[in-house]
Length: 210
Image (cartoon, rainbow, N blue to C red):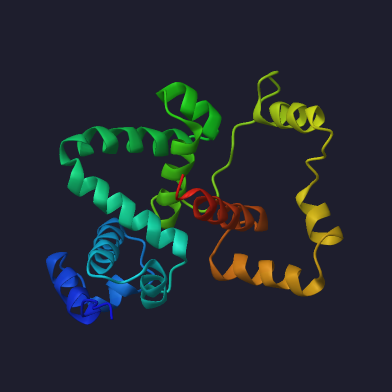
């Protein structure tokens, strides 16, 4: 039978190390120091024999959040010299996003992959570094995100549709009520932002082993 660590001890040790309370560590706080402590706890629990599912239940987080937290902390341990460069790039990414640049524009400006930019922004949202809703810059240029999306879906004979269409035509009343409540409970400014974060969660879960 597999032996796992005492997670209660790990919680106390990690909380003491970061000078926070155990309640903050396993709670919903998104302050940077608390989020980093929580990622370390995820890593320690995993190293101690707990599965991602068990850690997910312990901390009340979904599997993709736990897997991502473990990966982030492991990368810090394995490559501490690269951390300062990573942090600088993360800061620039978040700053540009706050200014209203799209993920595609940020990726181009910083020479990053769009996937990397998306992950940075998602992590920053989860940790409360950026607000749930950030107004986007609008553009009528041929290479604007809206124009690119339209061209993309036309190429494959698809329709992008609209948020209203999705809510009214493709959801039951129970599902609509669920998303409205989820949006309000998590203090999003729009249902679209809430659904987008959920879709990002699904993306990370589907691609975590790639």
